[in-house]
Each structure stands twice: as C-alpha cells, then as structure tokens.
Amino acid sequence: MAHRVGIVGFRGYSGAELVRILARHRQVRLLLLEHRADSQDRVRPRGDRGPDRAPCTPETVKQAQLEVVFLATPPEVSMDLAPWILDCGAKVIDLSGAFRLGTAENYRRWYHEEHTQPALLAEAVYGLPEFYREKIRGARLVANPGCYPTAANLALRPLIQAGLVDRRAGVVCDAKSGVSGAGRKPSLKTSFCEVTENFSAYSLLDHRHVAEVVQNAGLEESEFSFTAHLLPADRGILETIYFRTQGTSRVEEILSIYEAAYATEPFIRLYEPPHTPDLRAVQRTNFCDLGLKWDPNGARGVVVVVIDNLVKGAAGQAVQNMNILLGLAEEEALLEGIRG
Image (cartoon, rainbow, N blue to C red; front, side, top):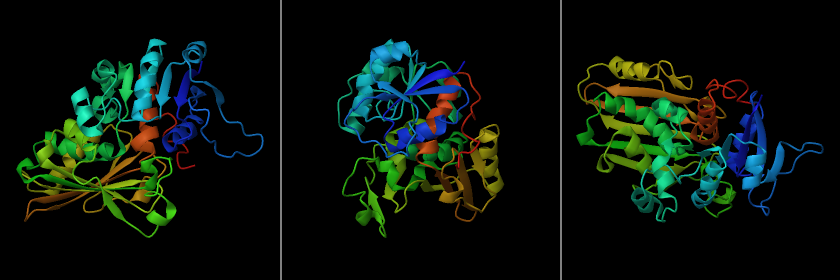
C-alpha cells in the first residue's frame, strides 16, 4: 500500500517542488493540505486537477491517516502546526528554520523572535542525511536544513573533522543563490527589474544560516565568515569556500578525505582536481557537487560546492528524509527523471 503524505504550503517554490518530486514517487499517495484559502493557485490546463486537496485540520490528518506531513511554511506557521500534527500521529518534516537551531536562545538570537515550541525545538533532528541518517530514522520531527548550510556543511565538515583546516586562519564562504531562495512572496528586492543584470550582497556576517553551519561543521562563529549574494538566476547555489590547510602535502590527501566521507552517498559527486562544478551541473537534481584546488606553496585550499536550492537545498532533501523515515530506498523519486 502507498504511504499517505501531506504537504502544507504547496503553492510556494519549495512546496511546488515537493509536489513535482512526489508526483513521480511510486510509493506515496499525496494530499495537499489547504492552510490559507486566500492563496493564489498557479493556472493549470483544463482537466489537470493535480493531487487531492483537503483542509489542514486535525480531522483531515487523522481521517486521511497521514504518516508524514511536510511543512513548507514560514517558521511561525510551522511552530503553530507542528504540535497538533504530531499529536495526530503523523511525523513532520519542516522546511522552515523553526526547528533547526536546538535552543530557544539560539533561535531568538538569529531569528529575532521568541520560539513558541522550545520542547519540540529540542526534540527535532537536523535533517542532513549524510551526517545524521541514523537519528533521522527514529525521529518524529525533522528540521530540514537551510540551502546555504547544506552546501557549506557538506563541503566543510569532513575536512574539519579530519583536522586538515587551520581554524586559526579562519574560513571564508562566498555564497551565491538564485532568486527562488527568497521565496514566492513578492518584494521589491526580488522583482525582475531589480535582479536582472544585477548582483548584490546581503546579510554580511550575520545571515541566520551561519548558526546552522557552525553548529554542524564544527567551527566557532569567530572562525567562519559568510556573505550571501543574490544571483540574477531563478535557482541554484554556488559557494566558494577559502581556507588554510595544515598537516597535508598533496591535493590527493584532501580528495581522499571527501572520498572516505562520501563513498556510499548517492547524492554527493566529486570532481577531479583542479576541476570545479557550475550551477547547471545540479539544477533540478538532488546532487551536491564538490570540486577543489589546493596551493601547496601557500597551504591555501579552495572548495567550490553547488546545489539546487529548491531540491537538495529544500524539497529534494525533504523527500530524502521522508524516504529514510518510511524505510524506503533513499533515492526513490530523486534520481529518475529529476531533470524533467
């Protein structure tokens, strides 16, 4: 029998990407949960109804016997919905930042709001499968990682754990994202005339995603400098990460650390040094691609890491987490036809 799954926030970019991926999932029956009746639907061809819909209520979750509910909603909405959905017996995968930071103090500092569900915040498992797969298997509430931290953590954590990065010299992450990372809600900053033929930096040193990187990569905040940039593109993230090395004499040693960490990971792809990936390599896929260059004279390393912010950075990773929760093949619906 198909697993019954619901999505709240299916009209946003991440929610729509969830619908697109789950529509081809062979072991899932999808239900779209209406949370805001005033939200505008995309226009569909005649006769194309899409998945079934129902009100986002406890009665719906129970009657539909939903096993997993995705929340592609703002943090404050996720905090309101998650408790009663869990009480109805469904597991929750939250795509917002509501449950990523572990403590109410961390949340207050980085999101500048009070957290209304501190007990659930402490319970939530950070949903980066390459690092926390076993914890995810037994979780009720999975905090899907942010897009920028997904790329940065996958690039940095293996090197830091191996002791290869000279943390005293600091790590610099120069990150760029397509406009869809800002969400579907219209704003002047993300309007066409502001974005096209333009390139801008924002949230210098105090982007809320910094907390996710330092918590999971193994760095101190003072050791990590992060700047986000808005690309004149619809989707994709490219991060160029600069660091000093210690205790290595060959680029092959750096590559071997990645090979050991990701040998069995289906969605991590490595490039032969000094080649590096670009955005087109990963758009509309759940892959994270890594390439590196190392200067032996100056002990300087550079890693270029790319993901699709709506797939591995959001909906694809959420489906990867769902597959783990339900005991399904992790790659289900995430390899076949994902470029379609």
